[in-house]
Every structure is written in C-alpha cells, then in structure tokens.
Amino acid sequence: MVIYIALGALALLAAVAVLAAARRRQSDQAIGVLSRETRQRDRGSVSLDALDMPLTGRQVERAAARERARKGTGGVVEPYVPLDPETIGVTRRQFFNRTAVMLMGLSLSGFGVACLAFLWPQGTSGFGSKIKVGLVSDLLSEIRDNNGFLYKPEGRMWLTEYPNGAVEKAAAAYSGPELAGMTAGQRLGLDAGIVALYQKCPHLGCRVPECVTSQWFECPCHGSRYNQVGEKRAGPAPRGMDRFAMEVTTDGSLVVDTGTIIQGPPIGTNTTGQEAEGPACIGAATH
Image (cartoon, rainbow, N blue to C red; front, side, top):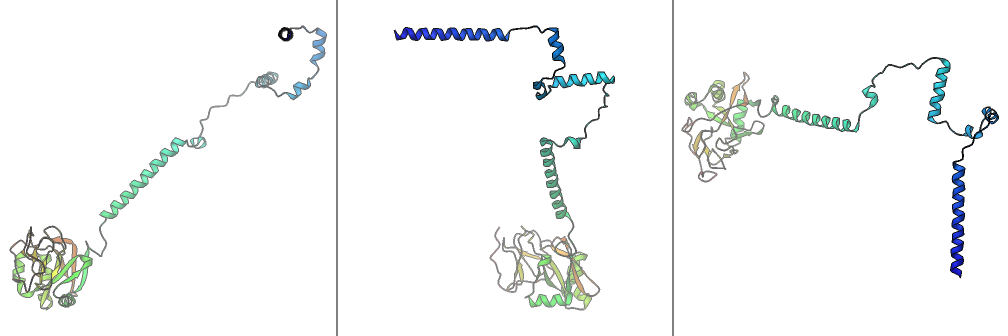
C-alpha cells in the first residue's frame, strides 16, 4: 500500500515539473507588440539599468561613427612609421646570442694578447738579450774564487778562463763573436780571456754541471764530458758545448749576447790541450 502511495506522489511531482517547464518555455518564447503610444512614451525615458551598464565595444563604435557623420569629416590616416629597434627592445634569443658572441670575442682577445706576450721580444735584461756581466778583470777573479767555473743564472751560462797561449789555435777554430771574449786577455793586458758557454748539453739538452776534481764539465744524463772551455772530450754528444757571442766594451766590460747561440766546435777540437786534472764526478758514458 505504501509503495502505491509513493509512486502516486512521484507521478504527481513529475507532472508538476513538466507543467512548470512548459510555462517557462512559453514565457521565454513569448513575443509581444508594443503600441505606438508606449513606444513614444519610452523614447524619452532613461533606464536606470542602462546608466549602470558599461557600453559595449559595438556601441562605442556606433557612437563614434555617428559623431563623425554629424561633424561631416572623415578620419585622417596617419602615415606608417616603422618602430625604432631600440624601442622594440632585445628579445631573449638576441640577448643570449649577443652574450655568447661577446664572451667568445673576449676569449679570443685574451688568447691573442697571450700569444703576443709570448712572441714579443724580451727586454734589455735576462736570457735572450745582451747582458753586461761585468769587467773582464773582475770576472777572472770571480772565476778563480769559484774553482775555475762561474755560473750566471740570468744568462743560463758558464764563464771560464781561456788561456792566452791558446789564442792562436782558437783563431782557426772559432768565429769572431766567440774570439772577442777569448782574446780579451791579450787586448786588455790580462793573463787570460773568457769564454761564455751555454748550460745545455748539445746531446739531449740536460744542464751540464762543473766537476771541480777533474776541472771538466760532465753531463749527468749520458756521461758526455767537455774540457774547461767546452770542447768535447768524451761521451755521445755530437759536438762541443754551444756558446754565446761576446763583445768587450771600451771600459773593459764583457757583454754576452744570450740571444745569439753559436754551435759548439766539432768533435776533435782541442785548442787548449787540457786533460782531466783529477777523478771524474760521474761514471763512464752510457748510451
């Protein structure tokens, strides 16, 4: 019994809903015709809703068109002027591209400056330039005070005595720039001249130290040996020790041109005849 009552109630509610929807549809679709008196009376009235509602874009355009028609003048067309790129601004892509180009330019500039600094001629002092090492007489005293060998680190060179008695033989074996220091003793009234030797062994470029006991130069790398003036006496070296060009100034100073390296004398050159004066500092040559 209860079920029938519930079904009846649902059917009644459904009928009411259908009737309400039908009446709403009829009211929405209703089209009326206003009388002439009503239209004339409403034409001078202002709706409060219209005062509060903002104008649409189409209404603004129509108002502008009516205003132009009322004035009787058309709009003036302005000529096109392209925008300034600075005004437009820089896009993100352009910013990154320009930044990358700028960084690359700075890197290349730094590399170029480093190359120029490396290739630029050296100044008036240090290795690669002419070095005024001192008076010949003072240098001979320093050589003797250092057991026959004087090392000058700023020029990477060894200075040793060259005996006046060997100058005649030296004239046939050495060039003029070398002889300038070797004959300085005779020209200055001293008991010996000077020879400036490059510190590197001509075999493989090792630094050649002196040996005080033998009074020779002895290379620790492969056992090449040279007498006190750098002439080869033993070992695998292809020639004697290389040497620098020299000149003696009017005041008796020795100037060594470390930028001009002259190859050492060939194997067999022995102008001084100096033999080892004591035990060697290294063993026999190994190759």
